[in-house]
Image (cartoon, rainbow, N blue to C red; front, side):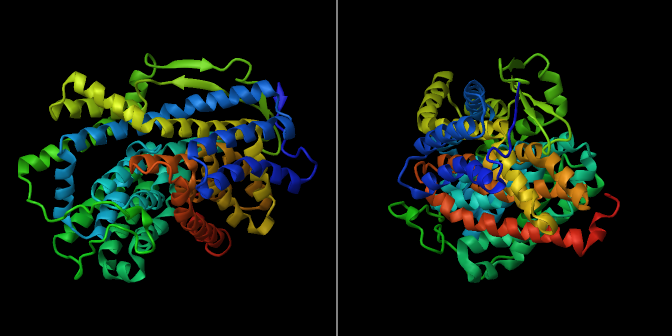
Length: 553
C-alpha cells in the first residue's frame, strides 16, 4: 500500500512546479510544431513516469501499471469512438452520400457563419448529449471539412463550440460523477450548473462566429446567432432546474436546431459569407480546392439517403446512452479486470479526502455498451443501406485503421499521462495550489475545473478528481459547497477545447493530423478567456448575487 504524496519537497511552490512538468512538457512540444504529436505524447508519458517515481516517490511498479491501464483506457472508449466515426464518414464520402448532405445543408443556408452555428454548435450539442467523449468534435469536424471549411476552421471552431454543452454530456455523466464523489443530489448539482452555463450558452455562439468571421462578420448575422443562443440557453436552464440533468443537451440542442432552421426560412443575411477560411491568417486553406455551393438540388429521395446514416447514428447513440440499455447489456457484456498490484494499492489521503481512500484500478471492458460500439453498429447498418458488401466494409475499415493509426497511439498515450498523474497524486498537487487562494477561491476554484479537464480530457474525470476537494475547501472558506462543486464542472467545460485528446480527435476528423500545435495555439486564448469569464461569474454568484443559490443550499 502506497500513500499519495502531495508535497514531496515540503514546499508548496516547488511541489507545484514539479507537478506541472509533465503537462508543460506535453503542451510545449505540441505547440512547437517541431515534434510529431504522437512522439510528443510518448515523451511526455516518459517524463510523467520519471516525475512520479523520482519526485513524488511512487513505486516504479505502480507507475508502469498505471501507465498501461491508461493506454488501454485511451483506446476504449475514446479511440474506439474516433475510429468508428471516421469509418462512417469514409463510407459516406466514398458513396457520394456526403456530397448530397453538403448540398442539403447548403440548401438551408450557403452562409458559412450560419453553417457553423447549425453544425458545430447545435448539432454538436446533440452528439455531446447523446454520447460525449469526443464524438461531437469528431462528427462536426468531419462534416465541416466535407463542406469545404479549412482544416483549422473545421477543427478549431468545432472545439470552441463544444463547450457549454459538455457538463451535461453523455446523458449527464459528468453530473453523475460529481454527485458520486461529493455526496450531493445530482439533481441539485445539475440545477446549479444550469444557473451558470446558460449565460455561456448565449455567449459561445457569438464567440465562435466572431472567431471565424471577425466582429463585423458576426454583427451581420447577430439575429440568427441570438436565436441559436437563446433557444439553447433557455431550455438548458429550464430542463436542468425543473426536469433532470440527464436530457439537458438532447432537449436544448433539438430546440436550438429547430429554432435556427425555422428562423432561416424567414430571414437571411444581406451578404452571404462564402469564405471557408478563418478571417485571420489561415494557411490551412492553401492548396485546397474550394467546395462549390452551386450544385444541382438533390431529390427528396437523395436527401433522405444522405440523412439516413446520421439519423441511424442519432437513434443508436440515444439508445446506447440510456441506463435502460446499459443495465440490460452490461451484466453479460462486460469483462472486468482489476489490475494486479495496482487496484486498491494506492491511497488518497488528506487534504484531498477526509479519510484515507483506496484508488480503484479496474478496467471495465463494456464491449457492447461503448459509444464506439454503437457507432460501429450504426456505420455497418448504414453501409449495407448504402450498398456496401461485407467485404467492402472490411476493406474500408482496414483503410480507416491505417488512416487513424497515429491518432490512436497519441490518444492512448494522452490517457496514460492522465491516468498516471491522477493515481500518483500529481494532479491533486496542482489542485491544492488553486485551493490556497482564499477569498479569490471562487475564481481559482473554477479554473481548477478547467485545469482538470485540460489534464484528463474529461469533465467527468475532472469532477471525480477535484469534486471532493472543491467541497472540502469551500466548506472551510464558508462558501457554498454546491456552488463550488458545480463550478468545477462549469469551469471544466472551457478546458475541453485544449485537452490534448480533443485536439487529436479534431485533427484526425479533419484529416489534418500533424498540425495539432497550430490548433492548440488557435484555441488556447479562447479557452483561457472563457474560463476566466466563468470564474468571474462564479465570483459574482458567491459574493454579489447569492440569490442564485436559493433552494440549492
